[in-house]
Length: 614
Image (tube, rainbow, N blue to C red; front, side, top):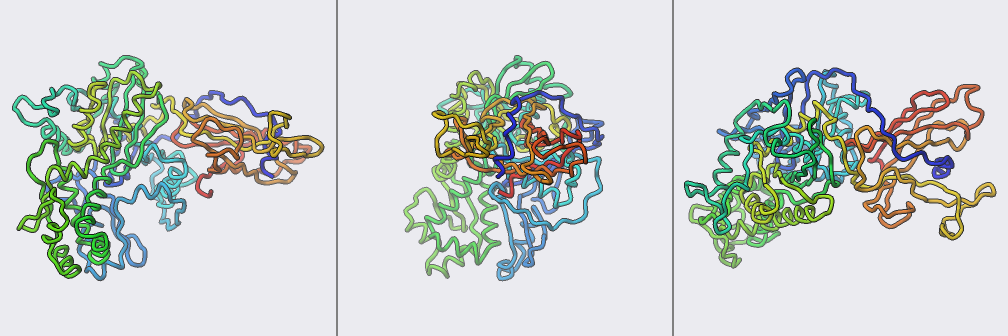
């Protein structure tokens, strides 16, 4: 059995810092892709001119008069399951389909979080792009585990972005980490400091009496219209106010998740050190959309809403787009209602379905916070908008507060709000009210593009985050000599006259352990029999540090390392038990990596780590 193979050899020392091999391929351009739950985009920079980050200005089919530097994360497949279009084009083509025909097409939007739990990638690969001088960077939420990161990597291989033979051409960037990398470049005029605004009755006022969150929104809107962004060669002015060792939190508030990371700046080189393992949860802006859908179900009935979505899918998309637009204009302290146009097909379909009007349904629902206007609009009162926003915003604030109470995070001076949801004045006001007394709350002006630009900077220099924290405890199951009184009897295995204890977790790293870039864990393995051509080592993980056996509660098999053994050369190995394969694992990167060497010949052994087949 496998646990027998490994580790009759004594485990090697846990860590040995090792100079990371520099990639000797001269990439000429770095391209970053940010697949968001709500919207997606890309940016690029030439390595000869790394201070200039170029953005996509307009997407085909984008809304008129808007600087569409991101496109909706929408995908349209034909009835034959073939790719048809993405983004605005997918949305518009789906809208133009005949309602009957549309039922046979497949339209996906806001589907990113499903990837987290998907484990299968289908190969429909086209030919590889010519482009070995391009380094690609794909962003993922930091709370995603290794299987989801591997899924994104393999999808990139199958899409022809890069070849599996050159894995170093593709980097996986963690979204809040990318935002943090960009935030250290900011100049003072590129940020909005909520802490500088005097508060009056829970709402601050500008000198002209206007509400600050309105002017903040206008500043954010103007920032979207620039196509090329110049970043500082060193660290930005904002950091001149920070001392070496200062701590800050980046809260990445996106469509699907909120991701929190805590970094410490290291001067003078401006490198970053992670202070606490990344945390977060499914508290993105989509929560507000789901609350709106739940409100519609309450008024019109869940059966009707489900039927309407199935029979009039394009009209349902229209309604969600209309709500999305109004959601962005919601501000705290607003006195008038927000109007949302109901598509004619909604009104008509409801009358046929229920035999009564939409207006009657609203009256009967007793929801006084939603009114009906004679122009065919739902009027959402400020109380209604608060009700839709509050659960998601409360979760975000609670999560940040819990993080700030941890010992490792004491002394945080800055909180950066980034991601598309950070544009919401509702979230900004809640953050300022709850947290403004304990730290300065900073919002980059180009808040929705912060991750994208940071991902480009990460691609230009992946060594900028020098120390990370392990999100889980990782290890393998091994045999150790059985010690009476210390080991339970049900773990006893007698082999060749010796007593062994099975299922012991030989840990590689522990949860929340600091691991520096280039730091490695080494283990030696030996084949169980001569002529063996493959060693498979199961990897186990746990959210707890307090685990001894792989059978302990909360420990699960999460992946496997495969070592392909070349045929032993005659005269080099007397027997299988003397053949040593040394595996080296890196845990300090955004992905776990493994390499291996046959110690008898000093030849590299093909090694792979797989988290998807489990």
